[in-house]
Image (cartoon, rainbow, N blue to C red; front, side):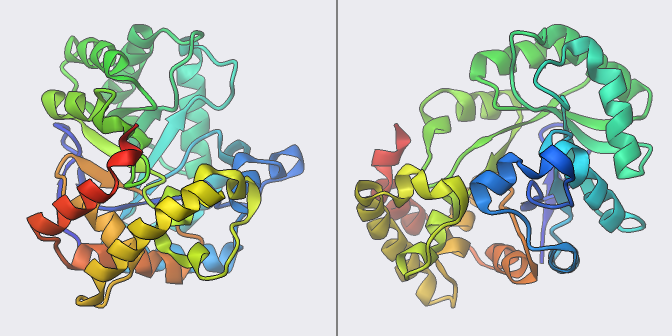
Amino acid sequence: MSDSQPLGRSDLQVPRLGVGTMTWGDPRGWSRISPATLAYGGAHGPAAEQEAFATSLTAGVTLFDTAAMYSNGASERRLGVLADGTAALIASKFPPGMRSTAEDLPRALAGTLARLGRPTVDLYQHHYPSRRVDIRRLMGLMADAVAAGKVTAVGVSNYSAEQMLIAHAALVERGIPLASNQVQYSLLHRRPETNGVLDACRELGVTLIAYQPLASGALTGKYLDGQRPKGFRRFMPYFRRKGRDSMTAVVNLLREIGTSRGMGPAQVALRWLIENDSVLPIPGAKNGAQALANARALSFRLTPDEVEALNRATLAWRQ
């Protein structure tokens, strides 16, 4: 069902859709109070994660994104168990803690590989820019990890266009491409189009990995049908009265476009991103049903007129 293409200009072949696994795993102690739990209401449990993983693989959605910081490594450990012996591609992120510096990368990478139970991570990303982390020095250490066979492709996350240029230039000196920049991007968060990030991705040959591609579930339409969002996300602008009113018109258009194809708002919203060859969305999936719903976005195309209609309907969300 899933076509593949290189991640940026790297040699890593990836599907057009991935899976975000921030909520996966069994955190212990204080790690139970994690951003995933607070924002999204936590995981659905091991059996549901197993279904989500297996369903995704069967659909050709083989890229799974995690991070050392997610529940203090619990997400990496769980993903490592699920992926053992499979064709899954794993993307993870440095650092494991807020006070890390570039010099901490070798030890942090060793911890990630141990939790994953793998000698190599397919994509290793810098999770977020920080004054404590020198980008050029970090990219040098990333290049060392590639040379050592511990990392296949190098990416960044939450980088501005200017920060991307610094990372790209540092890697080019070592003959390594910057493969990706993972940022928030959806029909209800189109800022990458106006802050230079999407343009920089195109110019540099970098894939934009889109997290929160369904706007924390707002674009699924289910929260317009009586369900209430769990966790802190219920306070997000999408779910307050003014944002909800604006969102309703967008969801109704998504439904209209999807009806003739037997698709819902979520599939059309994901497909809008996939139609851009520079973009790879990674929606979360807590269970098999969500994983299957996400994967259906790979089974159809949007017409140019439909893409333009969605562009026009969400112009207000570009700022």
